[in-house]
Length: 341
Image (cartoon, rainbow, N blue to C red):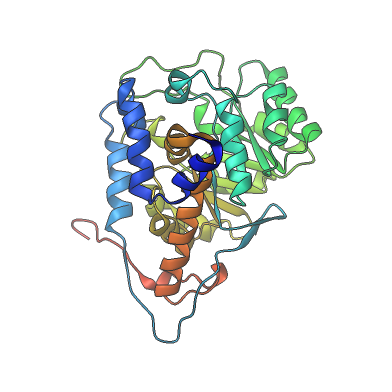
């Protein structure tokens, strides 16, 4: 199959076809369980999706018009407020290798093709440079390394290589885990509030505090000088029984109206993104969907996945009477009632 034929094939695929192509490959290496992570009982992951799915939408068609999801984040024009959540080494994609072009670079190039934004996690200076070279704007999320000099090297890498923002996933301070794994990796460690404030002061780039799931942390991030936060449960790999992201989002948005508020964890479709935007997010990150897309067809799969999600979001916007992103209105949502409320 030639490269041009492969492109035509993937560009004709619908969402489920793209996912199924990926699943065939992922099942073939026995890695499908790693698409649905979560700590211990995975209850936090399950509750997050259940709450998201329980939010319903009104239709407001008469008087509406075709929508555009174009937006801007960190001074960058985007096709839609759907971006990569922090992506680094993937157990799934690593096992699917060897890759002629490293998979992180393929993800970044696919995002660039789709007019989106890349976000990276635990990558080296050289890897980050190659990712930036793919053309998508990049947010570099630095891990809370036990070695503080490594933190500052990461901040400097982001600045020197032209990232549009830098940050830290504070929810990794006490390590990460899936299911009943031993928490890790061991090179991460606790950083105090004063440490994080020093990192924010130590870079000229907008600083993103990732892993916020309370008003307390949102306000603390604002008071330390952060430019943005990511409301997130780290894809379920923090602790079990975490409050759903979308349940927490409105109170956080209200508490920090001047910050850029992003959200991630559990988002899969354009309607999911719409719900987050209606509840106060200005952008939504996805990671598992990009792993799936890359597994399906590398750069082309990522481009196709992002295009489909962008189109889904715009269709939902049109049908709910929200022609632009600033028009997205929480009044079209019906939130689930908690038992006993």
